Every structure is written in C-alpha cells, then in structure tokens.
Image (cartoon, rainbow, N blue to C red; front, side, top):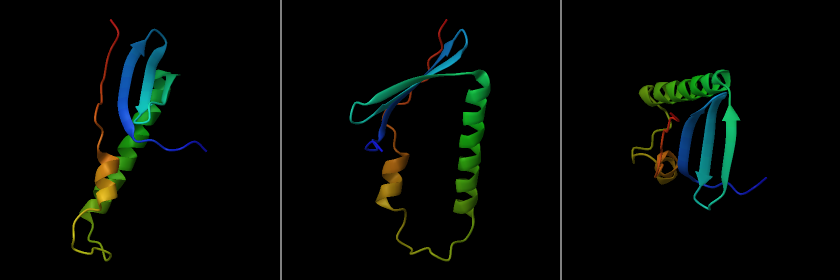
Length: 89
C-alpha cells in the first residue's frame, strides 16, 4: 500500500457525463476520477452517514473521557488547507 498523505486540495467539477473529482495530497500525489451522478450521491450519503455517526458519538457521554480535550491527531485529520468546488459552464 502506498504511503498515506494528508489531503491538501480537493476539486469537484461538473462534466457532460457526471463529475470530475480531483484530490491532491500534501506530498504532491494526485488522482482524478470521473463519477456518475449516482456515484456522487453514494459518496455524499456515505459521508453524511459517517458525520452523523461522529455527531452521535460526540453527543453521547463517554466512559473513556480523560478530561484533557481532543487529541492533536484528531485535529490534524480534520484540517484541510484548500477545498474548492468548481462547476463547468
């Protein structure tokens, strides 16, 4: 498996057949993929489900709470320097 990089840039563009998703890591590696409207809906649903689960976890009392706030790693994972949404005309 390739080394995991932190997300540095994300673009989403509309194409005649659906959408172009471009993702770049902080090491410079990038990927561009085409997605159908149905695939993009599935991505949106999966992200919404994941975020809803995290919100539920945040709202529920935790037996493992150590009282010193969020971990530094969690803050880094949530930080994205550049998120862009573009639509082609």
